[in-house]
Each structure stands twice: as structure tokens, then as C-alpha cells.
Length: 579
Image (cartoon, rainbow, N blue to C red; front, side, top):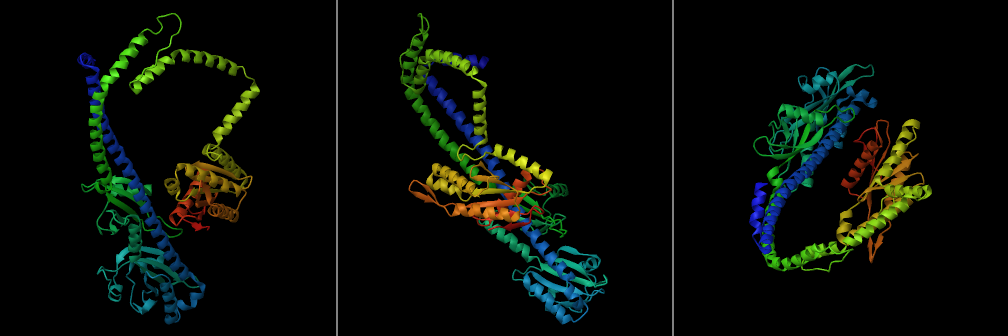
């Protein structure tokens, strides 16, 4: 309070021109400093979050690929061990058995070795004849394979290293072992079928994803073992995270965070490699990370640019403020004098118009409208009284109109999110009660940003509206179509099976892609990507069903667009392209 009084006393002795100049200088300085600081903080925070989300998504992709690949190999070896036509071969002609094993090896190039060992651990038949008649009795895969299906973590080659052609990189061979007991018709274990899967398959998956997602950045993707050791990545063999953090990450399954271990801050996204069907998994984790300093370098550069431009603008503003202060002062004094006489005479009076600056003009206009506002206030009071006296029928009519407006998207006249979810929740409750099937489709316009950038936002609105009409034509009267926001639509189908949902998704996709949209002189061709799913017993509510369809949309987007993917309810990783 004392400082404010002193400041008021000091400024009171200065001219308007100087006061405006000082105020402009202080305001511009504060504005520039606060803008640069705020932009830097929130920009860095926002970009950090986006990058970490992207890293987590990348980790999830590699984790899913690892799970699917190992699960497929696990199932192949298990199926081979149980094939009834092979029963005569296990204890029969080794040459015939070798041909069967080599045919499996030929189906997937990363099978480095497949062999069958008898109960004593002697290899009876193997691909390429490698290790035949050699003893594998002490190998972990054989010991555990005699007891049941097993998959062994990554390890270096022991017996096979001397038989295989050295790798070009000079690195030792590393394998993931899969083994299944082989039983005769009587259920007696007559040996173990083992396969050595080359660890190169994981390196190839990692390289493909790195090249696709981060072709020219400092990002790295690491695969960690159950005990936290790096199985694949730049810091091979090191322990990336402490035990307590690793335990927490494994429980969270997927996510992202900022890691300050080792002194350098890194942005990290992670995902666990989950079991796939009956494949038990090895407790691996995928971590994608990038240096925070490198990732946020564009933000830091932007902060300095904003600060430099801002202080330059502040200087220009100070000069202009001083120059304009003199012309501003005269109309202010005149307006003040005239306003002082307002209301002194009997009855209302009107001020003359004043110019000189936008603020003075606004003040003059505001004072001139003072009496008019009094009259308007009286009219509004009378209007409110008349409206209050309207009949119940008109009131109900207005309520119906308001409800329609509240439930309708203003651009497309389709249902909005709130109205759609109300109908969808009712359908879900009906499904739970009577087991009547429903399906959800999530539709998104491909490359919509390009339409806005090329033709303008008005054209983008026209495209959204026309796509909504094209989708609506393909639906039945019982189906619900809504715009969820932006270029995204959601469709609820009632009384449909998988085949009908597939057919409708294809019909909707083809309806959009086959009809260019006219805007002015231009014909705009657009396509849509669609995620499809059917409601399932485990779904807690309709949101679970829609989220599963949204993951199908994600698959359609990431595999080329203009296609539809069906997400099966019994396994979120079970997905099939519709078209």
C-alpha cells in the first residue's frame, strides 16, 4: 500500500506522455518476460509429454511384435510335437524326421536349429544333420522340455557355435530356445523337440521400427530381460533401471516418464512384452528413450526467438506510445469535461462523439449509449414479463427445440457425442439383458489436415458434412451415427453379426472413396479408415467397445489408410483387416 501511494505521487507529477511511455515500457517488458517464460515452460512440458507418448507407442509396437513372433514360433513347435501323422517318425527313420524338421525351418528363416532328442538326451534327428548323435542332456531346454513346454531366455550358443557360419558382425550367436515334450500314443514321453530361434529376428524388428519412427534422431530402443539387463540395444548387458523402478514399471505394463539416472535426463517410453495366447512369455520389457536436451532443443530455440522478437517489439511500442501520448491527452480532457456535466441538467442528455484513439472512441460510444441502455433495460424487463406469461405449450415447444439443439452436431446435423452415448448406453444395457448383439464402428477421414491446408477450413467443413451424409446413406433406420468431434464419426449397429458389420464397414468406406466432394471449382477425393468391433461379455460398458474399435482404427491408420480393421473381442491383439 505504501509503495502504491509513493508510485502514485511520483507519477502524478508527470505528463500523460511520460506516464504512457513508462507504462508501455513496463508492460512490454513484463509481457515479453512472462510470455517467453510461460511459453518455454508449457512448450517444453507439452512437447516432452508428446515425445514420451510417442516413445511409449513405439515401445508398445515392438513389444507387440516380439510377443506375436515368439508366440507364433512357440505354437509352431508345440503343434509339430503333437502332430499325429508324425508319431511313426519320432522313433522311426531319422532321415524322414530330419526332412520334416527342415521343412519347418524353411518356413521361417530365423530357425537356426531344430532337433529331436531321445529321453537320454541324444539328438536323433536335426536340421542339416547338426549335432545328430551328440548329447544335449545337460542343456536347460532339454531338461525342462522333458517336464513340459518351455521357452528359455536369450543366451549365447554353446554346442552350435562351432557348426554355424560366423556372423558378418563378428558377434556371437544368441538364441531363444523353445522345447516341447514328445509323447507316444500311450502318453509316454519319448523325447524332446527343441528349436533354437536366432536372436537376429529381434534385432531386425528393432532396426525396422527405429528406421521408420526415428530415422535421424538420437532415440534408441532397448529390450530388457526379466532381471533388467539389456538384451538388445546400445548398452548391451548393462542394467538400465533399479529393481524398485523395474517392479513398478512391470506392474504398469506401459507408460512413460523422465529418467535422470546417470546425470543426463532422458525421455523414456516403455511397454512389457506380454504373453500371447498360451505362450507364457519371458518377462521382457521394451524401453524407447531419447535425450531430453536433444528432444527439447526446438523449444529452447523458440524461447530465444520469442524473447528477441518480443524485446524488439517492446522498444518500438515504447517509441510509438510516447509519440501518440500527446494526441491522446487532448480528447481525454475534452471527454472528461463533457462527461462531468452528464446528469446535471434535468432529463437525459447525449454526449458528442470523440476520437483520437480507440480507447477514447470506445469511451465516448459507451457514454453515448448510457441512456439507450436504460431504455433497453426497461424493454428487456417488459419482454421478460411477456415471456413469463407465455403458455405451457410454447414453453414445451422451446424445450423440445433446445433438446434437439443440445443433441445435434451443428455442422453435420448428426448426433453429437452426448446424445450418441445416451443411445449407445441404452443399447448396451439391452445387450446385457437380452444378449442381442451390437457393433461399434469408429470412422476417421484420412489426411484431413491436408484438405484444410490445401483448400481451407471451409472446404474441410464441407468435406466433414458430405462424409457424414455418405455414411448416413449406408445405414439402416435402427443404426446410430454421430460426429464425435473433428473428422471422427462413430456408428452403432444393432442386431448384427460379424459378417454384417464387415459388410457395412466396407460399404461405408467404398461410399466415401467413390464419390469426390465438390467445393467451388474443386473436386476433393477423400477416404476413410474404419475400426470395427462387436460387443463382448467382458465389456464393462459401451466405452470399452468403442475403445476397442478405436484400436482397430489405429491399425487401419498405421497400415496404409482407406481400410477397415476388425478387432476381435476375445483378444485385443487379435485383429483382422476387413478390406
